[in-house]
Length: 341
Image (cartoon, rainbow, N blue to C red; front, side, top):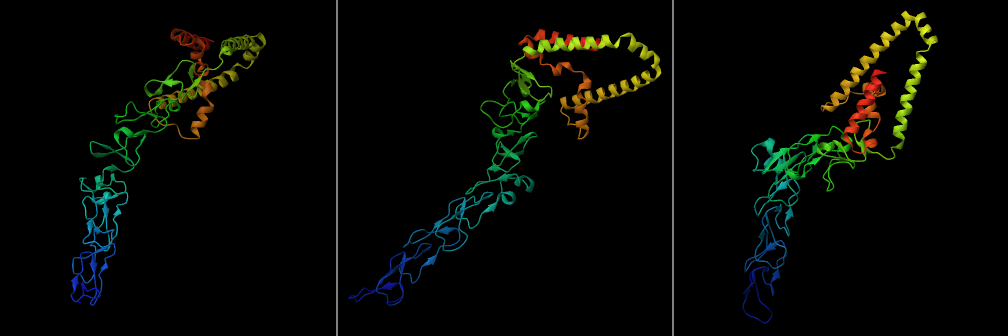
């Protein structure tokens, strides 16, 4: 019998091999084609599957196209490989995968293509790369004060710690004036540190007060010592003033008036200059500016007491239990009293 045919023992005629099988000349039986190959009826040999096609079964009469998102890069494939992340195959029968950042036809130019990405086995570049987010089919640049990881959407833009986003459809993320109050991230319980609330987490809740650093709200705790502490402070200042005015000190002053006046003028100039710098630093931060670089920032922090800002040292919110007018009266009285004395 010729190749592609066979004759069993005791038979006089030769028969053609069925599809999916083959034979050599003089064969008594046909042999099945292996996976990755196929044959038509009467084949003398099996044929390997073409590029972009596969066959995972034995004794097959044909091969199958790879699905979209997969490819077969060599002949005789028994399975298709999924495109790697960042690549895609938009149609079936792909011999190779295309790269999103250079080949994606859904973007207008090379700069826009670089923004797109895909998961493994993708038929399209329908995700955004790190630093971008998907909105209305386009990949837009991630806003300031936020993080956009691979595959981010408008709803999944993640505020950084110290930042605040009003809704999950907002395209803008704001820097918080009190950075310690804003937790960042996407949290079911909200974006604010416990004890803070409101827009930008800028309001301290009941039983909390603004820490002197101006960065976060702290729990009040036991405040019974505050009133007595203020009284003690006032008495101490009054005693110091009384001692200063004693005759001996007055006589000492008159005896060295010129030297003391010169020292006092220099001290006053230094004091006023430092206060101006401190106020400038506070104002700069409150309007969204950056910190003064180190070591100048450390120097200004060391001079912070020169502001005599008793309002930030004493948590009046904890003393008056949410009575706003009492807060205002207490802060104003202490500030005026300290200034006039």
